[in-house]
Image (cartoon, rainbow, N blue to C red; front, side):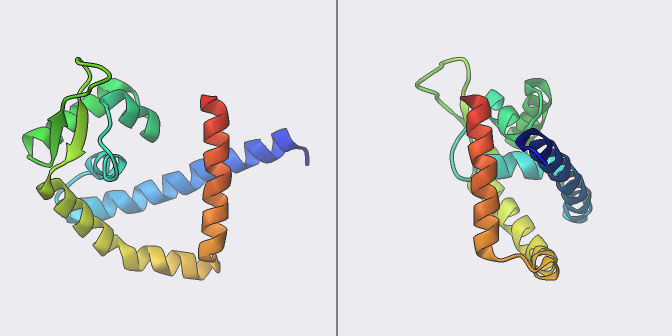
Length: 144
């Protein structure tokens, strides 16, 4: 196998894992009266405030779809807009304390199932770090 074939197979596996994870997350989110889209947007801004286009890039979604979810989360009091010194017309969005609570609750509720999956796969923390590092390098090369 050459590098291009290996890359294509990796991407196919990432898509498959993302699809499986999304279906599981949809069930978990519904059980807590929210949506997986809201969960993903809250997750995207959990460490730093981002603009709608930046959230879209992070999640692989178009800006318009993200904007609808952001608007819903702002209306629900789970996100807040902050001034963006780099671009006046594109505010940054951050979790409110209520949004952080929702996110913490979703993560806590989903943690046992995620631990079971990782254990069943026999994957170590080191392997997860290494896999993520490879994915981040590929992402950075694309954004180059």
